[in-house]
Image 1 (cartoon, one colour):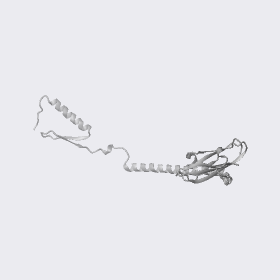
Image 2 (cartoon, helix red, strand yellow; image 1 turned 60 degrees about the horizontal axis):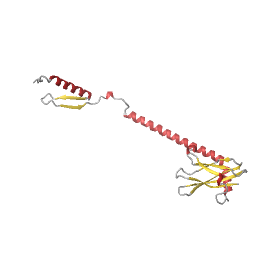
Image 3 (cartoon, one colour; image 1 turned 180 degrees about the vertical axis):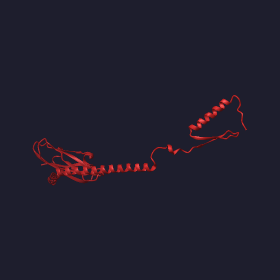
Image 4 (cartoon, one colour; image 1 turned 30 degrees about the vertical axis):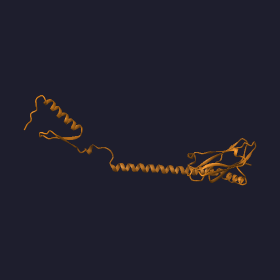
Length: 206
């Protein structure tokens, strides 16, 4: 049975139908009307067209992620090896320069009472770990203020947070001219943790 559209309303009715069709198309849903007297409508979501999808499949994404992780691990391993190599090179260079001086300084300080006669001529500065391959190292500056050529022996203690001496190192400089400076390096062989403090224990001019 046909339904007559009242006069005067045909234009607005057509406009409403047209707007409904446009809305359905822009929302990507399929619209259906009940031709019965109710005029109700229902909407259902259309399945996506997978042919329009772009991007990598899950397996490709997983493979890319694995490659990134492997590359990062390789870089980290290489960096760790580089740091270890720098530490070994730094320690070797220090040992070559100070081994004999260390033995001489330890011998000279063996019978020294108290802190020695040259603590005012010695100062210490911690070296950045970036320069030492991660090792704890101290630059010892010895300045001859005596007015004549002299030799020096220095003892450096490393203390833990409780104030206990956990390591002792020795450096020295022989035949240092008046007004001149020597800067031997002391390297701790203790682990990076806990934090240790370098203390000037003794300094003797002889």
